[in-house]
Length: 299
Image (cartoon, rainbow, N blue to C red; front, top):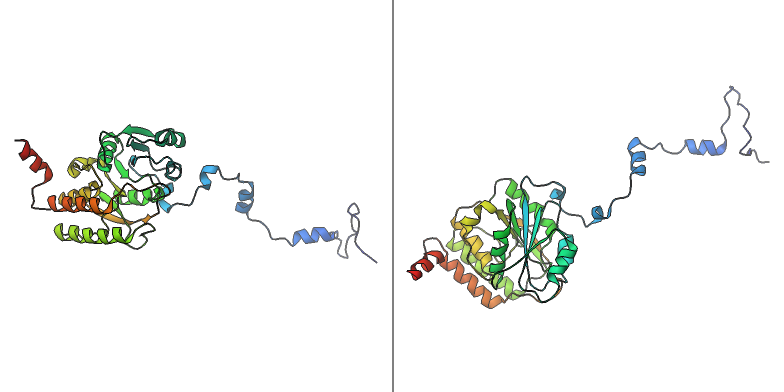
């Protein structure tokens, strides 16, 4: 015979006078007690969409002590802009898109993805011209430069800013130190990078681990010291050469180069490599700088 009482019937008291508890009450009593923070978490609202973005480095949530401008040169990168702009961390205060007379919807797409973006038109051809145009328009105390093709992850920007906040003047990404790497480096580009790296380390008495990679950040107050004049891809080498010559404190941080998301690269490995080599030799310590040579030619 079952001894289970209906829910509306109160069980008689036991032998010591205390009322007996129903079976379901005893089952509830055996459940583990939830902590106060557990109950608070249960009442917590669901995360907003912007908080469900891909995980970034630990420093993303901590704003830099200085204003930050991100300069992004772009030419026909409308298909890559949405991914790049979606990944820009909140520590960036200003985004400047330097358009190289794109034939596609690069500029409208950038404005659609980020209404606050500043779009400027470069004054001449070449990546160097685009970067110099963007640097001149930047208002942040720190300037970060990166490509628009999706090969550089904006989520690494807080790591660059960390070193600027702690005394370094120029920070460059490296694919060749622990934590870095490349998913897009061909054999030709890899050989050229190693050869040019040996040249810069020998001529400038440096100990760099990577050279031909344009993910960099620097203090805008040192823009005059960098004295940039190149118009093509060699501007990245020119920046390193002038930073070394000027005695700037340089840090390398690990960076993972991703494959271009779509489209074709504007880089020409052989011809651009020659221009980089010429820049390194021309700007080496003890040699006449290209600015001095140009001044003499104008006399």
